[in-house]
Length: 179
Image (cartoon, rainbow, N blue to C red; front, side):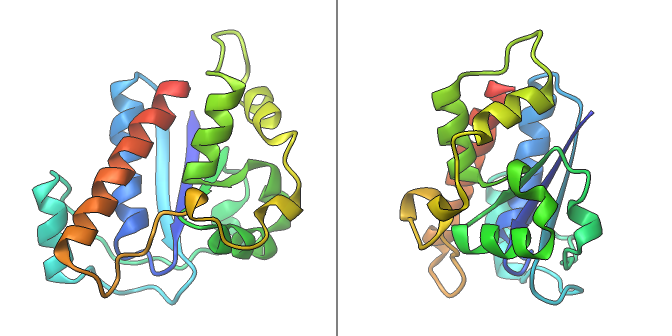
C-alpha cells in the first residue's frame, strides 16, 4: 500500500485539501493509498469557517480537520513526502534527513515524474521513485522557485483560495495518473 505525507506550513488549508484530493485521485485510479497531512507549526487548531466554506464549494469537507504538527516519526517510512514549497521541503528534510530521496514539492514531483515517465506495471514503487530522484541534488532545491511552489493563500481573497484548490485538485489527479 502506498503511503504519502503531505506537508504545508500550518496544516490548515493546503495540505488537508491536498490529502483529500490525493486520496480521492489514488482511489479513482485503483491505487490503495494512505495519505496523511501535517504542518511545521504548532497543531491543534481547526480550519477557519470561511475556509471550510470555500473548500465545501469544491466538494471537500474539512470541517472536522484539526491541524497536526509533523514529527520525524510521521515522515519515516513514508513512500513519498510532498510539500507545498521548497522552503517546507528543506525544513522537513532537516527534521528527518533520511527522507531526502522521497521528499519533493508536489509540483516538483509531478514535473520530475512526468519527465521520467509513468510507473511501469512491473516496476516497484521504490525503484520508480529512486529513478525520479536520482538526477536531483540538494543544491537544486535551494532558493525559491515559483514553478515548484503552491502559494499560501493565507490573508488572500476567497478567489485566491479557490485557485489553490483548483491547482491542488489538478496536481493530485496528474500525480495519481503516473502511478
